[in-house]
Image 1 (tube, rainbow, N blue to C red):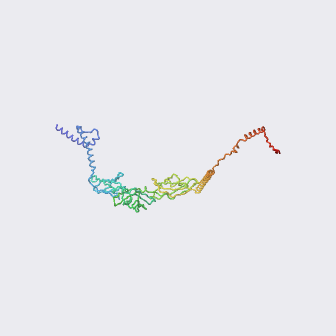
Image 2 (image 1 turned 90 degrees about the vertical axis):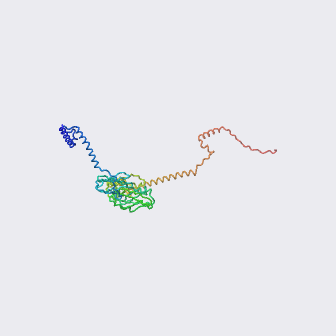
Image 3 (image 1 turned 30 degrees about the vertical axis):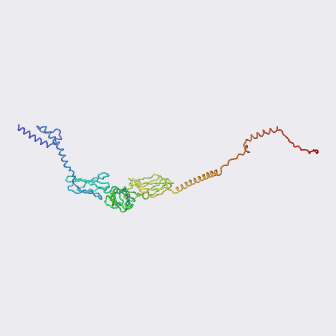
Length: 448
């Protein structure tokens, strides 16, 4: 019995070693093949142990590969706004790292990786006057070290320059203007610095524009040294209080206003007028398709009250336009201006270009003048006649007629009078005629 028990123990030990050596095979098989006489309970227990130990080992390795973040170590991070560079103390055995820049206004982080064992990060120019936070994370000796630097805008709130804007014109000139801060003291003075974002060359404004002694603008006559993007910084000084700064990054292409087209010409035939021009000179050489043009065509006679719709022509159409204008045509006035094809920021109008027939225009003017004069003459004549009629009635009013009793029966019908006359004539035959004779008286007797 003892020998049998020894044999059984040896078989059990052998089988257990074989099971641990082939645990991967045991996972893939639904039913493990085992030697005769090996207890099924031991095989099941060994299988469960192998399944539980593998995740624990993997979890331990994962914790070993991810070093803990060391919050107590200091990197002494500094920031240089002129070069937009973030620096910190260099450490040995740096394996990886990254830098983060987060503006307080936009709250959109910008991430940059660290190249090799460098101890700095350089960002592109960005507006900083609203406040920025920088974070550096480096992996040293399998440990993560992190540090955050807050870059604020020192000074009294409301003292910085406001309403800042710049405009490029005539391809070579630029004007920048700003307004005095609402809380700025009386002795405030501002200064403008311009830095090319590519070459990192900074220069101060060569010619300031002042209002009551305070700089409120800048004029530059040569901007050839500026590239696509430029950084603008307006600082301020005062003896009474600290002054905040204002900064902005501008794309020069967006602030340029183009000149009118060059060499505008007009050729007319019986039905159309053919208009041609050349693209204007700009700060950088641009293709035709990057322009758009606006045409204003009006008749000279009604140029002040015309409401013609402006014509927009794309630059990729060959810098030409056919204007329908059949012959004979009146005199027209043409003006043009230019803008970028992506933005309708129009420049100044060109000098007027005249085309058409002046004779037709003059003949029409003569007709209009004659019509107007004839209308005025007729109106004046009618007015004079009407006025004369009114004056005559006011000076010589009609006299009322006096009743004529003698002739009041003149309007009686003559037939009635004739009948009455004949009727009375018949009566005269029957009238008695009394004759009176005068008797002469004889002489008196002598005796008497």
